[in-house]
Length: 318
Image 1 (cartoon, rainbow, N blue to C red):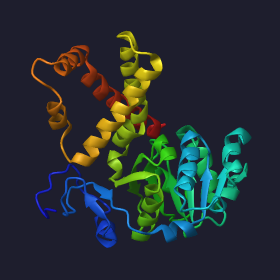
Image 2: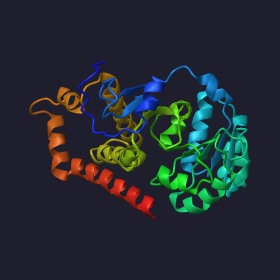
Image 3: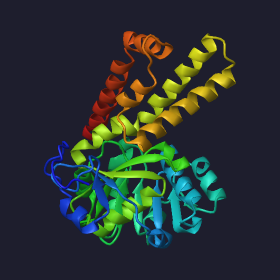
Image 4: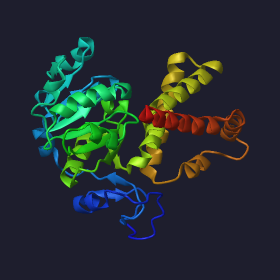
């Protein structure tokens, strides 16, 4: 990997020392330089640490439930390591059937846990943070998966200097295919950063970014699965429009999106290069691409990311 010449956008990266200590992150641009980069976590063999963690989850919504189920599916953690709290028994039932300890009392997901994950809606943050702040100890790590709620806001509600780590995961954690972004609060150290990254790497890929970029992460990958579902639905509708059976069209559309994504990730080639490889002069693909440009697909997707990012900022200001 080149050691110099990185042109990534980050400045004042507040976790450079942690990254240097960990030795387990690489810049997404391929550089080993720490200046101005964001970093992809390179997992090491640390399943033994995952096996020993005690993990509490406050708020078992779609994302929290998917995260716990995805980690358990990986096989490196046991149901008995988790305590999940929610006021809705129906939300807890699927995990209870897996052997996870469940409760409707927040203190049960905080007491004696190594990691406490906040999975409630951002609108519920003030009430939940006030309660958790009274219970949490400095030896515990507080992980927030709440969109738009900054580490500074969380730290302000804590009664002591608690390590806070903010994560933006995806519902795809249920399949072990999530793209999760991580940023660190003021009191999180190298070991705690590694512990959280190891945990979320159980359900996909983890990148470490500075907090100023977390709203953009929310707009892109946090909301991204919904965009892709819409694209798959539209491709499928197109197939039906030209005569394919619905089940055949949906299967072809979903597989095409999955295969194209794998090609981007595994080929190290830019999407433009890959697109050109399947676009013959005067052929069917260029005709379809022309129609996409005319209808504004590119602009629509860019606008979607921007709108979701702006909403994430609004949620953080509420």
